[in-house]
Image 1 (cartoon, rainbow, N blue to C red):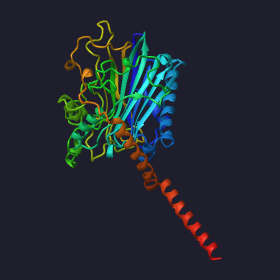
Image 2: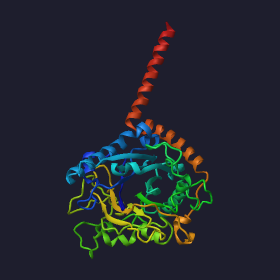
Image 3: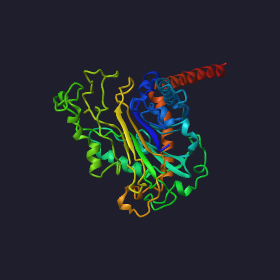
Length: 440
């Protein structure tokens, strides 16, 4: 095998469980026609569930992630039938969440034996560093001819609002500082290192933190992919009534004011990235799809009208970016091949459209650079130093998440209110019975 096929999908679920019958048929819409299923499937989810279920996690979150598992199985099965291939099977490797942001990795059975281990990392950048906003990362190690091919995937959800561009940049800085990898305990691997691979191969010292004990998302020998609701907008102010006629529509021609290409130059992500203020060293395939947010209709838009929420500028909030191959890759390397980069149809549970990218990379490990200076590639000197106190900060934030999640369940939800009410009624009833017994 010369190339490894990847499929990366990001979706803001709108705090609702997806419907597998609706989600599955569209899941692989960005696959090239007549292609086989990708070797690795990565799904980045934001607002994966309501705050109580997301913050507490565990069995509270399980019904929402189970809907994604079912969607993957159904989508793979449907694709297998359409391609006449009954051997398309995905094996779940890991689901990791920090509050409302989750990352799920599936590996096709044809390369399952080559997966040697998983590391993960997480950071909240929301209220008091909790996970209403944040990022999750997974590093997958795949054995290739005695070497290790490393793949780093990051799922993120940054600050919302037209006027929050600087906060999004700050979120990115905190994410780079705080995503520090450790051997995963949430995957099918529960190991201290990547199987029998030398740990020094997995955690290169040249990560820019000055400590060989820490490894962040920028390393010299790993691929890097970012997918999520990055929330960069096409304006720094909310639209006025006069702006509404300029909102994109599917029937507009490229040179007309209502064509989505007319607002793409205002995209904050590209402006900030080109200025060196965010998403350092990452690239994105050209956008040829309409804005992914914010739709007002909770049904799939027809081919004549896009229904936009009037209080938000239509924007490409949902994005997938990647780090190109390093300059020191062998000359005979086949290269990175980018396939379709599409917005999927609107799902009935969300005001975002999912986005997916299909691509392939050389099926070989990235070697250590021989004579490249740190200034020549960001892999060798990441933009911000790693936070050595990441573990303590995350543990403190996790305690807050659990407490807040339980309080929100009993205070904000009908079920929780019902439990509290029943408890009060029971307590009052018990007190009345006790008083009656004491009076006799």
